[in-house]
Length: 478
Image (tube, rainbow, N blue to C red; front, side):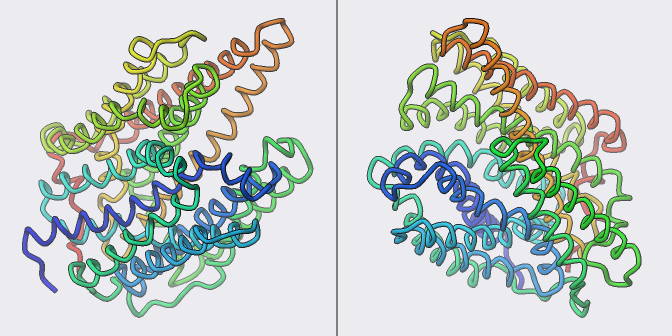
């Protein structure tokens, strides 16, 4: 199936819309959690499973989903993921018990993993020319990164109606995406078709990721030095070691380890881990500052993010011009540095802060920086990857974002809580102590971004001007 230029761009928006459903789900649910807890009469532990149940399956199946796309066709996996996510959203919207809601959320996570792991590689298949590919990745990067801020706003609006609508709103979108997918996306066979499924690798890496995610998301509650946390992390590392041993010996592994010999791919994923950690600091703790210190409602929090989100989208759409003119490294480093300055501004916000003076400049800088940085980062993560491994590369970079965000948020939440307790014991007021904890989180988030700049500067030296070499994979897509 050959697409003309107009159809390719429409197909890109279909992919972005499908991926946007997945990205929105992360933040739209967080806004509605208090309403869900009150309506279903859930304990705090039960409430956490509404988030954790989703994260477990989402994080656990990203790598496997990407490789299945390479083997059986990325459009098939995209359709399967959208279908699962849409049906599970209906079940979530109709749920009247904890068990049904958590179970449906786990299925949502599986569907989300399939969609996220192949959407990026499908974009690379649609656009083979360097200029078009850079522009398309700028659009995709905005959806991937800016969707979280949109979710906060949409979550506030829908929760005012009923928390059920944060899930039911996915139904018409999912049906439309499925219909347009069959019409517009090429149904080519898997570029690694004929290969076998590495069952041992699939089981070990999925179990390792799920155990790691479970340990991380429960670390603050159970204690980072508790037997449960250390045991789960240890078991995850053992399974990961077994996985790497299997992959190094099989002729058709789930993850060909040679992909990491590509400097662009390996360094981009390290930068992705650090970027996700810093970005989670921005979203999570700035929302807490607005609500718990300044007293904003959920809807007001969403509106506070709106200017930065609009600027984020605009800079994403123009980031391809920077890539084509300067290459991958300068816009990536410049975007990361701009984001870092935004976090440093948040690290000085007072208890009686003003939106215009203390919040808006930081959100604008974070929006500009992220909008510019994501395009070159995604191009680097997919650059030079053979078509038969594009789904795998997509799954790897999504896993890097997910694990970096989860690890970073867990560490930052622990540091912020410790600093708040310390200030409170020293006699600081409740709001001042809380705000002091947030300041530590923002500072450490800025440190993560500084580390990302250092890694990008050191390891992406090969990505100089003339982005065509980096933006175009070594082999043409099938």
